[in-house]
Picture 1 (spheres, rainbow, N blue to C red):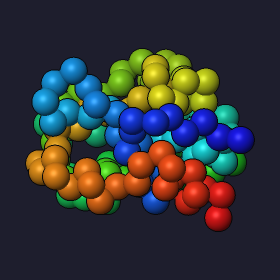
Picture 2 (picture 1 turned 180 degrees about the vertical axis):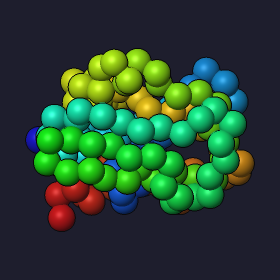
Picture 3 (picture 1 turned 45 degrees about the horizontal axis):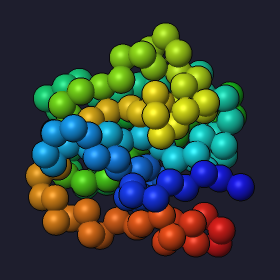
Length: 129
């Protein structure tokens, strides 16, 4: 059973948003379900701080033993930080997807768009389908 923490927002493509310590800034990563489906993560390609993405634009890729997958920006906004630790230890995505395995920090253009994303209950139903 995959871990689906309360208090986060989720996309149908298995990314999550978690509030950071700054207004309108969120940690973005892939969910426990997604990392489990991918298998052992061996490489993560991330954008540069300052890059701007529209909702559901691909902002990078994640490579696992099984496959390479795109990473999608949950909402429109600007990348304000990346998790450089993943360069040396991409396995953090597997071992701690909601903590040290985060990928980028995103400053969202329109915080009201968060309401379009799933809460934990809805995401739990989504992955059980």
